[in-house]
Image (tube, helix red, strand yellow):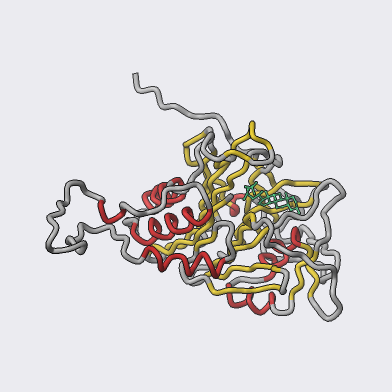
Amino acid sequence: MCTAMSFTVANHHYFGRNLDLEISYGQQVVITPRNKPFNFHEVDDLNQHYALIGVAAVMNDYPLYFDAANEHGLAMGGLNYPDNAFYADSKAGYKNVASFELIPWVLGQCATVDEAKKLLTNVNVTNRQFSPNLPASPLHWLIADQTSAIVVESDRDGVHVYDDPVGVLTNNPSFPKQLFNLNNYRTLSANTLANTFSDQVNLTDYSRGLGTRNLPGGMDAESRFVRATFNKYNANWPEHDEIANITQLFHVMHSVEQQSGLDQVATNPAKFEYTIYTVGYDLDKGSLYYTTYTNNQINCVDMNKVDLASQQLTSYPFINQQAINHVN
Ligand SMILES: C[C@H](CCC(=O)NCCS(=O)(=O)O)[C@H]1CC[C@H]2[C@@H]3CC[C@@H]4C[C@H](O)CC[C@]4(C)[C@H]3C[C@H](O)[C@]12C
């Protein structure tokens, strides 16, 4: 499972993502500069494109991005969408893009969500495998810029591009159901509420936080969708203090983190899914902040510190070592 969301705080724009999994694909923070060609199987290659920063597994010098942002502040993340994702064979008259090509194809050439929407018309997400031992993963995608967000789902009945008014995505069920499910929580509140139960029953406000009493706490995707959305909209944002904003972003992302041991993997009962990494992209500056499960320290990689006109990928292994500040 995974959670992704976009944040707008005054004039600052961020995109957060948790990767919840039980294994590693050897992912790193990877910067793709503008002149490193993206070769696609069926749509036109991008020999020059916008520069990307994100988390990717690099295979044969090809960055298989899990999530990324480009130099214009468009961000995109692929999240698990098992049983529902359906990728078709190539179809004549469509833009045939393999699922693993979608992130570089969109972020390489779109600066905004509106441009992405246009590019995605008539797209067919194909079932092509990257390599014989890397079958296509069942994913859906959140795409966000500084002002709006969309979700892309490729179902049995075709590709859907939905407006995402809350800028949040988790996993199953499909996005329209997740969004509708928020209605069930419309009485949640961060405030101290009056007794609406009955004026004939004396109920006391014995604890702070009773308005959030029914906020779902589960690891499951529906619970995380509600919790992430509620926390995103109710968190206090310092607005003009960037470090404080990044810190708050990590608090919200970690409120839907999976602690190791709480989410057993059905196909491998000895394994538990957990939040391997959390990333927060600053969409205005092109920097990527991250924590890992074993390292709570916030680390930052800035895309503008490498030569974005070059042709070579730059990769930074995750720093997984916990850094304890010993004060005596
Ligand atoms: C599994 C992850 C989602 C996290 C999640 O939700 N985990 C729940 C597991 S569970 O459902 O609960 O058991 C997703 C998110 C992004 C994916 C990579 C995207 C690039 C590339 C695409 C290729 O085509 C196949 C290999 C490839 C490296 C992908 C591997 C894997 O699929 C990644 C890591």
